[in-house]
View 1 (cartoon, one colour):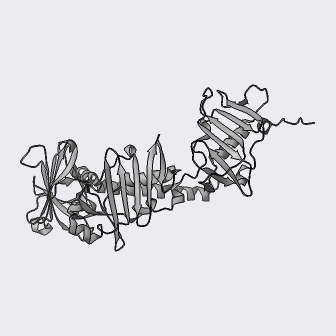
View 2: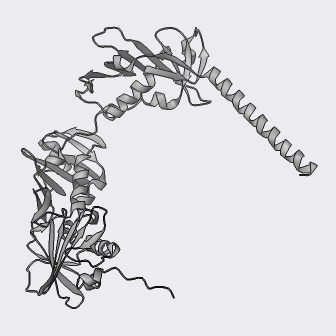
View 3: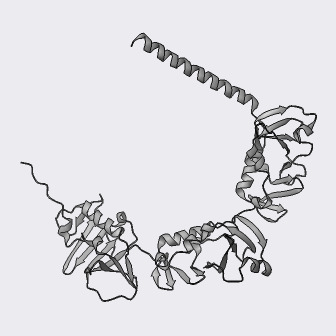
Length: 442
């Protein structure tokens, strides 16, 4: 290495050392400015009093749940309360402004914009009272002091914003609790059509306007929306005049009826590009996100299950295959390899798994709701246990007609039509799964 390169590397090293030194010095200076004003045990706080000018909001904790008790008697938003508790039980300030402030009017603390009082259970006097004054125009921080002394500090704007929200923002937005796992029926009444779904043996069926197995992912989308239904904002108490004003007494854009131990209804109307919700169980008009309607607004065909069989290929341990007079059985051993029952023929596990993958990913092109007569000459039975006598899945495949082939799945009252091209490699016998013999190299 020549002398020039050594000097270049040495210069780079010096720059790095200086950079680290400056960075550490800034952190030390910052640490001198920042500090923790006080620390409280969050578990001891059971009441919060928030005063925003002339508006007073009071929250109380009971059985570990927070409620707003003034000016409304409603459940409190857990996230909003947690933000207040987390920030103000251990309040970090940006810098100390004045240790013993004599003129609080300099900081707007003679008439605070916001006061926050934290109480323990049953106490008349607060554990701590915070007072927030004017904003510092240079860094957008806010001046703050406590009732313990005249020390003035500055806090970040976002901490002040936790205390400056509207009353409605502190309400729990989840105004309706629906145990979707316990649902037995679900009906959708749209402006021009209706759909009825019923849960049978852990599977959802569409029973009106047609009998069909319901698409699992579509049901999951609707149940997810119901389970996470929240208000964007709360509007008015629902009396007859209010319901008429919003259009609920006319034909709603959607009425959802669901049944657990009893029947419940959700009414939805659109007005001025907003979506409003009303349910008698809650009794208030709420605005909700417009995209709530999306999974409830699809066409009939999309509500129907479009997979021929809904299973995971790895769970299959035995296959019965029959084509006309040819029958054979394949069984998966404990090592995950496939073998032909009562045969010494070597079976390619890869070919069997590819065949199962084809069935697993076989989708419906159309439905034959009035089943026609077909020549179902192929029968496939899939078992999830090697010793099971009854198959978990059973289907029959008809000879291909033009561009589609008919499939009959056990327990479905209609036939499924699939693209013939998807069944081109359907095995004709056990030989279709044979392990190819490796040719010896000469």
